[in-house]
Structure formats: C-alpha cells, structure tokens
Image (cartoon, rainbow, N blue to C red; front, side, top):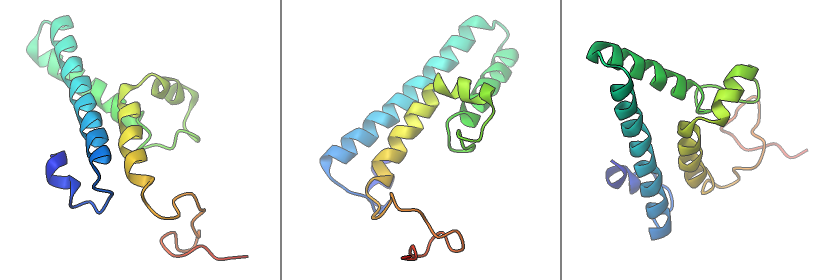
Length: 120
C-alpha cells in the first residue's frame, strides 16, 4: 500500500523517505499481527478472541493521538497513550509527511485555517 500511495501523496519521494515510511508500515504490521497472535493465545474461544482483539484495537486507535488531542485528554487516556505502540507508529508517519509541508510550524489563521497567516 505504501508503494501505491507514496508517489501520489505529493510528499518528498527520496529514497530515505521511502525507507522510513516502509519501516513504519512494517512496524504497524508487526504491532497488530503480534497483538492478534497474543490475544489468540490468551483467549481460547475464537469468538471471544475476536471481540477482545477488537476492543484492544479500539483502545489503540483512541490513544494514538489522531482521533483525540492528547493535550486536552483525560489523565487515563494520556497514561495509556504513553505506552501505546500505535501512537509511536502514527507519530512516525505524520512526522515524515508533515515536516515536508511548507510553513508547518506557523500558527494557522483561526478564521480560515487553510489560508495564509496574517502578519501583525
């Protein structure tokens, strides 16, 4: 999937960036495959294992920093996100893509977040 999307995202197409994105893709694959194997070993009933795996995936998605702002999250969510491997995987993907956007470190205009920042 990374090979298909890489050249269509409009990001830096250097070999270094491709290797980093492939590394983060493999890391995500290892995270979720390992999680599935672990839950399959711990829970003996296949239906219960599927539900337990779904629950863990939902917790990982809620604590990876994409769906929830970690600065305004509750203490419990912040604590879980500090140990969530999904968060580190998402951080790696986003840092490789957002760094290449021009002026990514400027504060956007609150009225039009996609427009230029007014000079005051």
